[in-house]
Length: 80
Image (cartoon, rainbow, N blue to C red):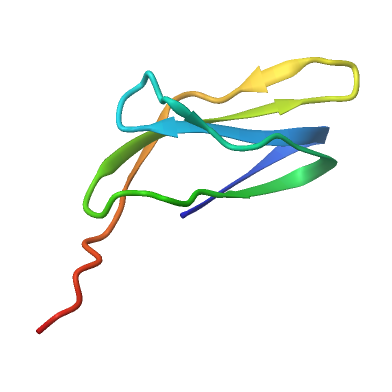
């Protein structure tokens, strides 16, 4: 799964995610200062709903955190 978002000024990129709004997992901070962000998530469980929120901090240290979002992974079982 890849989470993508844009910001109105250059900032870093990070995503918190997990099976509840407590999240539980955080991606490694990408300190590259950009306005178009894209962060890949790995190690996800098949057929599971995940919650996520994105975080970006500008050069002045102002942190913006998105509202909660959700996605559901697909069933990865190969057909017979």
